[in-house]
Length: 370
Image 1 (cartoon, helix red, strand yellow):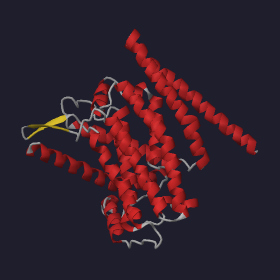
Image 2: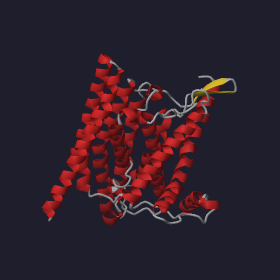
Image 3: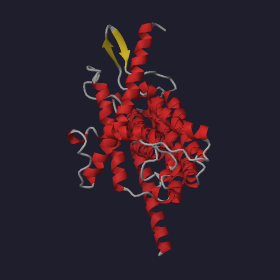
Image 4: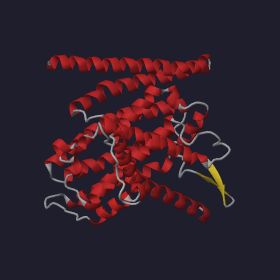
């Protein structure tokens, strides 16, 4: 490896890491401002102009806040668990392309750290590691509330990872590749979210469950678990869990935009590659707003219903969508590209059948209670 290539890789890594760290800080401000607007409130506006320094004030508070360690915790695991949650939320973004390439200092610099030919498998493997930090945090705390939060998290993530993995399969089928760069380039004519809208919705719901966002925030349910797996954490150790959650929100939004919304593609991007990162950021901001909107509008659902929805609705519907996608691609290969439009039509019908099934099940339970 030449020194020029080493410095290029190092600078891009630092930009990615500090971009995610800065993004985490201002995603918290974005969420508080957006929820305030949705609920007709003001939101943070005291610290700095328009409240822009509020994340810095929060960081200073957490840095200087006293850290308490209960006497009976399993100390090594208790200290390592926040890192096991935090680190995957950073390194998972290494294979996500934020653009094609730019010319700088006489060099062609690709706007991604690595273009793995199995980039999708890398994403799935790193995403599955994050659950260990939460489970170990609950177990090592030697606290029943924290332990229940960790158990809930493991069951929830395992259940919804099936749907998440099938969402990746849909993108792989449509892109005919496991390289994220190839998947994005395949969407120059049409976003995969247009060909497979139901698949995108299922993927988005699964990501909400993966990052423990409302209404799937059962592992940290304050009412019954007093914050769940991180009940015994304070100071910077708690801040690492907090950072990991918001960084995972950003990363899963980047993944969703890459797989289904064309990633860095947009008008004039082929002539001005520097627009690529801006288009990706815009799509991430929209997806983050959807997550925030859902948190402001939807109540937390019961845990048994959460698991029932995952296994009885999400997994079967995802399997059906994968089958429809594969069939549509086969028909398009045999009889012409026009048959690709059978995919969104059949997927929408399958989604409507699932919605009817859910509403009928809810009405039946309501009558049984009455």
